[in-house]
Structures are given as C-alpha cells and as structure tokens.
Amino acid sequence: MAESTKRVLVLGAYGFIGAEVVRALRAEGVSVTGLGRSAEQAARVLPGVPFAAGDLRQLLQREDWGPLLQGVDAVVNCAGVLQDMAPGELEAVHHTAISALAAACAERGIKVVQVSAAGAGTKAATEFMRSKGRGDEALRASGAAAWILKPGLVIGQGAYGGTRLLRMLAAVPLVQPVALADASVQCVGMPDLAAAVAAALTGVLPPGTYDLVEDQPHTLEAVLEETRNWLGFAPARTVLRSPVWLLPPVAACADALGRLGWRSPLRSTAIAEIRSGVRGDPEPYRAAIGQGLAPLEAICQSLPAGRAQRLDARMALMMPVAVAVLSLFWLASGLVGLWQLDSAAQVLRAKGWSTNLAGSSVVFWSLADIALGLAILWRPWAERACLGMAAVSLVYLLAATVVTPEMWADPLGPLVKVLPGLLLALITHQLLQER
Image (cartoon, rainbow, N blue to C red; front, side):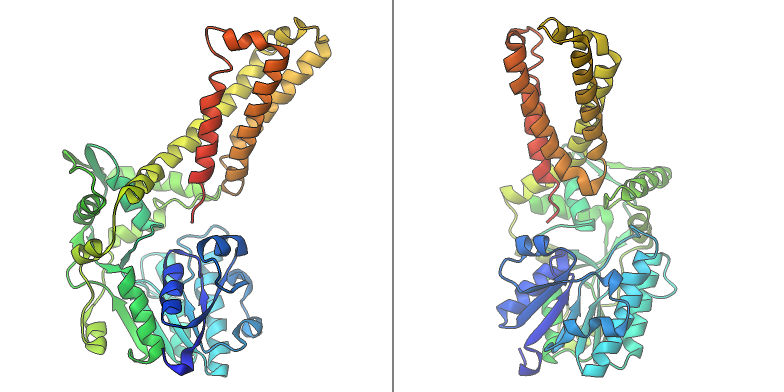
C-alpha cells in the first residue's frame, strides 16, 4: 500500500462489504478505523479494529466530518440502506451525508472511494438507486480525488440482503422456488471488490467510475442453481416459478415488516431492482486494470462451502418461521389464559390461594405472555423478547413444581411441553443475531 494512503476510514465497517474491505486492507498493512452505528456489533464482527461510533444520518454538514477525518489519508464508503426505515433515511445516508463528506475531504486532500451499486443514477427506477446516484454526482462535483465503484450482485463468504435470500431459497428441499427467474444478473466476487478498493487507494486504478461486474450475465434462475450446487444441496426435482402477480402482495407484506424493523430482502425496492436487472459494463474496469473480473462459477469455486454454510442457509430459512411460531404460541397462551380465567384460577384456589390472588396471578401472567408475543414482532426488541420467553418459561416450571408438582405427571404433559418452547426461544435468539 502506498505510503500516502496508510490511514483509512471505512464507513459501514461491520457490514457485509465493509467488513471484508477492512480485513483486506489490514492484510495489506493499512491502518484502518471503522465507522458505524453500533460499537457492540463492530467489536463482534471486527475484534481488535479501532472503531468510531457515528451515524451518517447525523453527519449531514461538512463540519460534522472534521473530527472523524483527523489524520486520515483516505475514506472508503461501504455504508448504505436498501429502503427507508424512517422518512428521508435514503437521502440522508446516500446523498446528504456523502455530499458533506466529499466537501470535507476535498478541503483536506483526502481520497474517497465510494462503493455504490451497478445501475445507480439520478434517473434510475427506484429511490434507492436514485439516492445512490445523487451521492455519486455530489462526489464527482466536489473536487476530491474520487473513485466510484459500482458492484453487481456481490458474492462472498458471508451473506446479507440479496445473497442471503439466494442461499435461503437454495436451501429449500426438493423444489427450487424462484420469482423473476429470467431477470438478468451480473455478479462480482468479494475478493475482486476488495481488490478494486485496494487498487484505487494505491493509485493502480485511476480516479473515475467503474462497474464491477463479470463479463456475462446470468438469469436469476441460473444464479440460484449455481448457489445450490456450491452449497452442496441436492439438485431440485422441479423449479417452482412464482407468478408475477404474487410479487406485489409479498413486497407489501415485507414493507410492512420493515416498519417493524425487519430488513427483509423481499421488500419492494429489492424486487424492483431484480426486475430491472443487475447489469453493468465491465469494459472500463478491464481497460484500467488490465484484466476482467472472475465469473460466477469461478467465484463459487474459490469460496469454501461446507456444513457451516449449509446450516446457515437452512437456519436463515427457518428463522422467520421460528419467530412466527413463538409469537403465535405466546399470544395464544395469554389469550387462552384470559378466556379461561376462572378455570385457570381454580387450579390455584384448589391449593389454598384466595380468589383475588389466584385471579390476579392468572391475569398478570397472561398479559406477560401477550406482551412477549407482541414484543418479538418488533425487531429492536426481538432478541430480548426471546430471552424473556426463556426466563418466563423457567418461572412457570419452577412455580408449577412448587405449587402443583402433580402436573409433571399429567398425561397431557403441560409442563413437559414448556421445554421445547424454551429451547426454541433460545435458538431463535441466536438466529436473530444478524452479523
């Protein structure tokens, strides 16, 4: 790495792309500082990497960047959001913050490498791509030394967003579900993307805008088939092509879940981007660097795939089901308790509890069940809700053992059946950890 770019600030450092860029740069001896919203996630994903907590939604003025750019030679922006989680988030993260960053870097002579997206432009079909395009334009106009890298579908050892969806679908046994099967997709391997960032920082790649895509496009169905083969799953016996009319209601449901904090890869923006195709022109990068990028088949061959990757794909497929089952189970438990209040309280009255105390206890724990069943649906609370479910399950088991120990011998097994639910809550807690 050139001496002039020994200190690099990476935005979105613990994300799918950012984390691999950080690791690649550190392997080249670069001093890297990461920036992102959560120091806790950064420590888990990138242990030992210096980190500065910062939210691009709050770094909207040139002067906001000053303290973060002290002693920095270059900035690599790997941050991004697919769809608004709050009003104006796309514009803030992709355009306003980047415009302010570009101005601050131009003043200080700091290089900027922007990881954008293939197809980004001010006249693109979706606000995601348009906001990315506005950020790219602001960077070009700033006067800073700038490289705008526009990758296609990024394939790496990890998985997030679109690549995670591919692996989930590839994990479906026996059949291969696919929507928009004929959509055109060009991929790029994570190693090639990281190498392009390094080439920009060293000056091997001249400043400019480059699509990072393989030479030949694939259909989405072909990408899924290659993903399935790479993971080592048995070939699908048949392909189930989802009808186009099914996509809008699926996207609407995913968007509704987005308002609860769930970042589903099936949201309307993602589907619109797939429908438009993930395409780019590989020639400018080839001309600048002297060679093209690895095709999908070579990308997959270079990435190890074993039991861990297959298990991750299957568990990603099961996670939404587990959340739904837990929510329904706890909501039903609480509602049945309130519906059968007198019958439930009678069990306690038979043990000598007063009428008021028995009824109050049933109402309290029924409401607790309902609260947990609702809490797991709100993504920021979901992990804690799982732990709450496990804790309440233990309280039920301990209390029942003391007050009504004979229930352990009940032929319907009301206490024994608590144990699988407790275990499912703990497993789901682990599945909910995104990175």
